[in-house]
Length: 220
Image 1 (cartoon, rainbow, N blue to C red):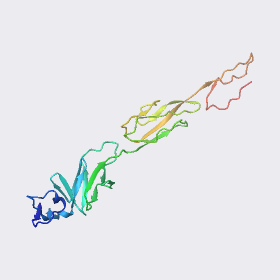
Image 2: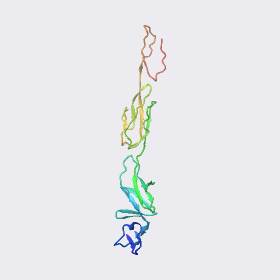
Image 3: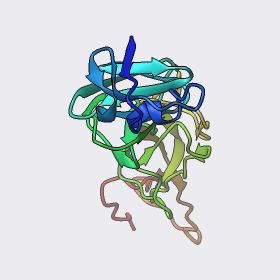
Image 4: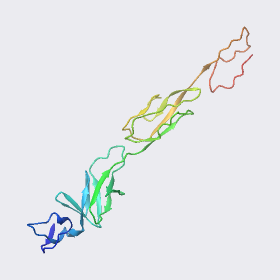
């Protein structure tokens, strides 16, 4: 309820724009037993409501200086984002409450994307350009750079979201969650050919080898 004494004095706080009647000004006003001079405007962003010692007057909301204002957000925070962060007069606050200052306040709400890690096991290989170590739900699509390894052929990635070794892996925009990928390899086999020039060997030399083979000493 709003009460005032009609004494011809000035009007205070929120009533300065709302309690002029037939050219008369009112003074010593209270709103719900709180002096109007202690009340300041709360401008709330879309989806934000305020509770505590607050007063809704017309389309405006007011808070009482020195009291706790608790904020809530009616919007839905999408997957892949941190909880809502409130900003009061341009300064982010911890949690969802603040002490109402002796001034008008503007409150906004924002969300920021969660950063997820991407880990790689190259299995002894290397990449010419490093793959990203992290991403978020807003990141552009990421196609993994495949590694190389001397003596082996890359056989694909295994890991998050993959049912089998896959040579081309793309993390689409809008993806969420920690990710891990492991490179798999196929051992290359190399052929050895000989021209004995009409000669022979008691024991045939190997016809092939790979990078893991033991040292080979040719039999003359």
